[in-house]
Structure formats: structure tokens, C-alpha cells
View 1 (cartoon, rainbow, N blue to C red):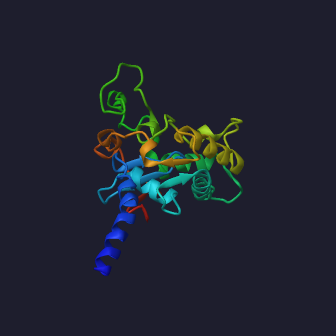
View 2 (view 1 turned 90 degrees about the vertical axis):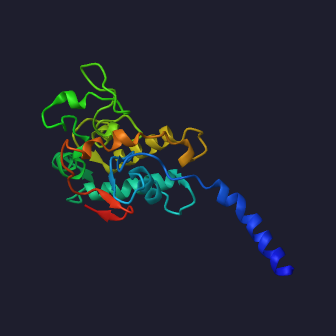
View 3 (view 1 turned 120 degrees about the horizontal axis):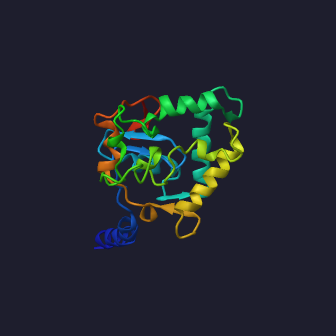
Length: 217
């Protein structure tokens, strides 16, 4: 009887924690993170879920401001190929053409009518779709998230500028203002829109993260 009672108590205590665990994030296999990093999933989970699990360093189901900035710093180091403390023009080009070619607005093999779709895959009136570039694959409507961090418009993004961008984007996603981003407060992504790039409209490119969130292409 004592053993049954102890087991029942353990289950009762664990129950709320299990119930509170949010389901995996929805969306397609391809995801562009708030800081511009591509995630390309091959295991059935969304790319967004892989990003969340990586950014949530302590795996408590919340991305804090510090975790968001640490995730941004990790990606900054990857983009700063020559290690000079800034993402320069050549490194921006490398990002746009090799690391995340999905963000290119004209990624439709020359047929711009294919680009005129919203984030649900519906055709929108010309001249532009409701979202362009990286905005089609992520939470923030930013066609080029690296250039967007260049606050002084000198075609180079310093570590300080990238860190500032991480802080601002964190605040945009922390909708309840409690200092952490949870799965529940993130927008729902369309699986159809997020996979449209990979089905006949261009290549993959290198540098993305896939599989279970740890592989590199």
C-alpha cells in the first residue's frame, strides 16, 4: 500500500508539469529564425520547432532574453567568416546566396507570378506578395533579416548592431512582456507556405540546420 501511495503521489506531482508542456511548434520544414538563420527539418518536426529547441538552452520551454541574445551571438560568429567583428558586404552576399537562398525575393526561376502569394499560399494582387524573402518562412515580416540589423546603413553589421536587433526582435515576440518567449505566444505558421521554396522553385544552399536540429547542410 505504501508503494502504491508513493507512486500515485509522484504521478500527481508530475501531472501538472506534463500537462503544461506545449506541443511542438507548427509550420513547414523550412524556417528562417528571427535572426535570419535557416532551419531545414527532415524528421517531421517543423523547422520552427528545431529553432526553438536550440535557442531554449536550458530546455525549460521558454526562450529568455539572454538565450535569444546568446543564440544571435552564435549565428553572428558563423556569419562573420573572417572574424573581424562585423558582417561585411561579402559575408552578406554569402548569407543571401549560400546560407539562406530561400530569402531571395526572386527565387522563382524568373517567373515572378509564382512569388505573388501570401503566407497562406494564396495569390495576392500585384505588384508584390504580402510577404517577401525571409518573411515567408518566419515569424517576423523582414525580407532580409541580416540587412535589417544594419541600423546605420553602412552595409556592415557590427556585433553591437546584431545584439540590438536580437533584443528588439525578442520584444516583438515576447507578446505578454514577461521576459520570455513561449511556444504558446508565437504566431502559427502555415506548413504549405513554409515548404513552398523547396518544391520546384530553387535550390537549398549550404549552412542550414536540419534533421533533429543539429545537422548542417
